[in-house]
Each structure stands twice: as C-alpha cells, then as structure tokens.
Length: 439
Ligand code: GUN
Ligand code: ZN
Image (cartoon, rainbow, N blue to C red):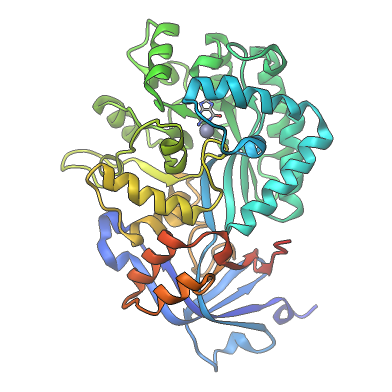
C-alpha cells in the first residue's frame, strides 16, 4: 500500500502547548486559527498553518472542521472504571462512601462478563468525552485488568491501568494477600506492560487497605519493574489521614508511609493530595513524583481544595510538583475533562487562585502528559507525537453558540468551552490518526 494512502489531514483551528504556561507564560500556547495537521502511520507528521499547497497533502484524506477547535486528546490522570455504575452516590464523605457504595459495586467485577461490558462502556464514554489516555484503577480481580486492557487494545489506545491491591479493611470478597497481589500484578505486568500503547500501574489502593507486608511487596514489585507506574491515593480527607496515623504510628506522616515502603519516586501518581504539608510537598518535588487534581470528586465528597499555587507555580525557593487533572469517577461526577477544567477553576476561586483557560487546558493535555512522564508521546499536536486529537465543536449547544459569538480572543473561547461545554462538544476523536467510532 502506498504510504500516502495512510495519510489523514485535518484542517481547522487548533491549540497545543510548546511549553508550560505556569512557568513560560502565554507564549507556551500555540494557536493556529486556520491550521493543518497531517497524520501518518499513527503519528503527527506535520502541524502548522493551513497551506493548500503543502506537499504532504497529495493523496491524503482531508477533513475540514470550520466551527471547531482541535486540541490534543485529553488525558485523565486518575479514574476508576469499576465505579461507573455508582457515580452520584448520595450523602457520604470518603470512608463512608467507600464502605457504603464503592466496595459493594466493585464486588461485581468477579464476574468476567460484567467486567467486560463495563470496560467497553467506560472506554466508549471516555472517547465520547474526548479523553484518549487515562490512568485507570481496576478492581482487586485480575480479570478486571485483563478486560480493561483488551478493550483499550481493541481501540488502539494509550492507556495505563492496574489491579487494585487490598489485603485489609475491606470486605473479604475484595481482599487479596501480599503474596497473591504481588503474583497477580507481576503476571499482568508480563502480559500487558509495554504491549502496543499499554502501560501497567502497580496500584495499592491507599495505605489503610494494605498491610505493611503488602506495601513492602508493592515496593519490591516496583523496584523490580521500574518502568511501570505506581498509583495510589494520598491525603484526600481528614478522617483518612487520622486513620493512616493510627495504622502506621511509627511513620512521620501519610507520604512517609509510602516512602518507607519504596513507593515514592518518578512515575508515582498520587490521587488528590489535598491536605499535604510543606515537607511532604518538598519530598514529592525532590522525588519527581506526580499528583493528580480531581476537582469534581473533591467537591462531591467534600474533601477539600487543591493547592494549584503550591504545585504549579510555587514561591521562590520551592520546587514545583508534576500535576495532572483527573475526573476520579465514580467520586467524580463527570468523565468530561472539560467539566473537570471548569470545576478546577471554581476550586481555585475558593482558594483565591484564578486558573486561566490556558493553564487549565495545559493541565488536561501536555501538563497531564508531563505528570505521566509521557510528554514526548502524547498531550501535544506536534510532529512526531501520537496522533490522538479531539475536535471540539464551538457551537454544540445554542447557548455555547450564542456566547461564542461574543468571544474576542482564543483565551476567551477556551474559557467559555471549559465553563459551558461537555461531551456534546466532542465532534470527532482521532486515535493514532484514525477517526474513532463514538457510538
Ligand atoms: N481512596 C481510596 N479508594 C478511593 C476511591 O476509590 N475513590 C476515592 N476518591 N478515594 C479513594
Ligand atoms: Zn480515586
């Protein structure tokens, strides 16, 4: 087959980031009001201004999106696929919410057929929301990981996922042991990590549901498989933090529990990180670890307000911390990263910090890729990157169309999208340069 036959060309406005707007200012944003993106063999071959005479256009399939804004595929840095059936569970904060709703729902994933159905539905919903990469928690059942990776592989997606490790403080039906959790995770790493665009994350749920022996085993597993990720939860809720103190009285604090067991370092992803003290921030920064901000979840469970200023633009003398935005469904109330950006703005406002649209879009694209140490592959519309691209319709609702007509700058268009838009604005999604079915 002639290679030009595999080319797809997209014409329309697009944004991407050539740097970090928190440190490099507005210049970090690249905006093409009439742009051209050429994809070939899964990668972006060219991204720049529209040029009808561009030599790579010859033989390419051209699609034109006049009322759209193309953006890099969104990246959700923390989400639980087995909690889809319990989004919007009423009236509880973290520990009660886990016991009353979450641990009940997750028991259903011992059923392979059920897990397969939800994994497929979840991936479909992610794509309908414009999310092309996510760091995903499965359940304690190894088959829940298998079914998730199979669903992701079918769609050719770049995905990160792992089996939850949990050997105490949960219903018996959801418990593994330090040894079985280690063995099952290792088998999944050998089967899936590095296969196509799939990556494995060693996933101790959080300190309270793992014994010291299990955390030690998780640390050993990570040490033996250093290119994998390690994902867990950190300092989300005051009662949780007090519980961790009582379970690990010998440790200095929550992060120190993970540190003690070798679970702090590059490619560690800590969900929430709300109530983190100065020495813990310092340690996270020095260790080159990442945190994931989950605004809709933190609001829904009443967990607290994330400190953007500390992680993204700290005072002189303090190091920044890699930060990605995340939905945290099922505590999060939407799989849409546009909705997460909008709520991140409100969380910032409550803390006296006004998150700009440029910074919010960065945190959902290139910044999230940076948090995942995947900045060289995803999160940008740039030559050599994976061709994962989302086409946002600026007129997807009558209100959005009306409001859009009053926008005077690309920053305003972006801010209106993150304030008003949701999955209805996702007009098309390209995975590896090919249009995805959103049905
Ligand atoms: N902490 C431990 N497990 C969970 C979970 O499933 N969701 C959230 N939001 N926090 C957690
Ligand atoms: Zn979570």
